[in-house]
Image 1 (cartoon, rainbow, N blue to C red):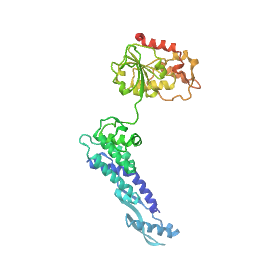
Image 2 (image 1 turned 90 degrees about the vertical axis):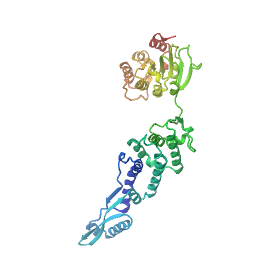
Image 3 (image 1 turned 135 degrees about the vertical axis):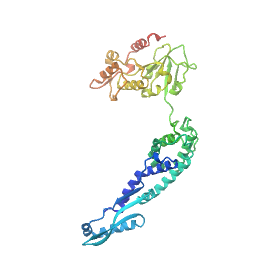
Image 4 (image 1 turned 60 degrees about the horizontal axis):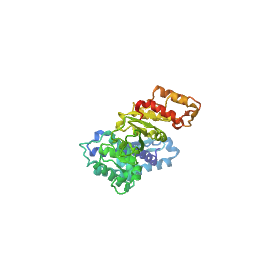
Length: 400
């Protein structure tokens, strides 16, 4: 026998699974895009597992109490009864099936009526404040946009009222300024600061993109600054030859160099010898992928000098996935063999797969990993004179 409370628990699971889709359906209908979203059924029924004659005879008090509990439920909800004629018990009017029709009725039986009311109110407000005012002729919501909404419905319903209002204000501002890039600190919304945006970033990013049709350009953190040295002593940038700048700023460097040496180690950068038409840059480890976004690097000759260890090759692999023409220097088997006595053990080698290494680079990496304890040869352990000679050879006639 399925009790009323057991049925409520099952209805509650049904409600929790379906209500986000119901909310999204409301948005789609408001935009006359109902065909673009899946239709979660708002009808739910369940068999009540009525007792057999034998079970009634074994505990007629429990069976009687169970039937009465469903008779009380039938005063509000649709419970189907059937007649059972048993020789030992007589004719009984037995609860057979519960049928709930409509999201509100399912929520009510599941004791989620207040939650559903909040969901309704916020979905309607979302439509009125943010969805309806959009220029939907220019940007109809896609199935992916509706999926973003559905993914966040539960969070939207659970937000405290002040955070809900702030989110609406932020999203409305993004709609009015879709292409503006700024720090979260600059958002002109009362009560919204960097920590608020960071805490609600998935809501802001996903819903903002769905409503505007383009990525959100709010920055939470300062961009990575890359240390740069102009290795040509005849050149400077506003009188500077050693400075730090973000990748976005470096993209605007006037008269960019012909050759760039990217160093994994900062001291290696600071001790690079001078070369004509060349620039040295600190790759900042795995942030080297941001360096690759600088447009003029696509035309420059790029040399990468990293540690001879698994992570050094992983960083090189990442750089080359963006800049296929990047060359490595001092990361070859000959350099490793010449300084094998200077290697130390590598306690945390990476196990990543590398798809962008040359045959010689793979040979050097294999040699490092072939020992019982993987090895690493840090840049600074290689004699400075050897580094300068190798770099000079790699640069050819570029040295000043």
